[in-house]
Length: 440
Image (tube, rainbow, N blue to C red):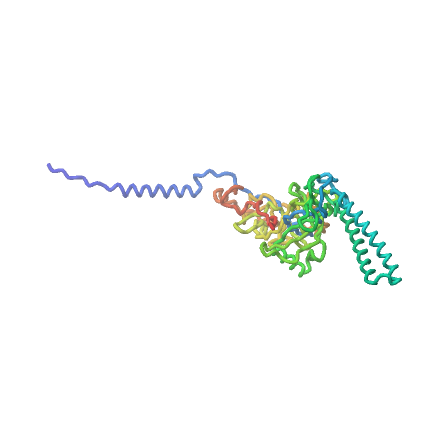
């Protein structure tokens, strides 16, 4: 008997075709949304909007400086001798003319008495010579010599008086004295060269504050002066404000009184100086301070809350509601902070409706429901503010809102999260501040 082998049907192409059919079905079902449970539809977000706040103000530039005494004197011995006593308490306030040290006066008292005796003898010899010259008993040259001896004796007396006076070392200025550097019983050396340093005195009221400004700042101030917007500190005494390292407010007010005549070639900076009253003697020479000086003339600025500023790579922007009632990003150029609000130099107009709330819920191009709300300025300021003129508020204009179209599927319009890495440009960048302190 003969058996025929049954011809087999190929299974691999059929299996591949079946898998392809199943995959297409799954793809269709998934992307049609039939397998995803539909959640509640997302409505149009409600946001608060406001026009930028208009304010007449002056911008301030901030520098680091150090207080220095208006006058500082090294008190040195003017005559030599043994130090007899110290007449002050270390660190106390002294007045000009107060006795600080006493050097042994006995040698100088003896010198003064000796000089006076010589002066009396020279005076008698001069008078006798004048009487004899009238009788032709002595030549005229002899009288001239005696007159010279008399003048030398009188100068010696004056010099001895000075030395006796210098034995009492007095304060040359009023101020705070340092500690005594030489104790009683030590020999001090006077004179013009290698005189012994006894102590130092610094004046306290008023007090100077020195700081350095960059060349770019100097050029900006000069340009403002050329444009008639701000006079230089060489022409008028600009008001300045300072705060110490443990203070938050710029509570110390002074004025500019000096700008150097050239820039430092090694640092490219120019030195400025401000004067501060110090009647309570609180400010001490050597203290560091932050100082603010006027960086512009008075002008009308536009201000918005600082926390609504967004970052898109290297650009800053704010969200505004356009004529279609949709959120629109608007690139802006930032200025410094002013009482909690950010100055906008470019990019906004006084009529723009800026979104000031719910920034994380809004995406560019998304329809929004705008609700008018005012922008408020912080009542507390870190420095005394000059009198400003507020611009009249503009009449709020309601942004037109179109009828919302049918909301898209949930997966196509996800609600943005504040910490989402996919939309960093919608999160306000609070760490960036265009008014960072300038380093001298």
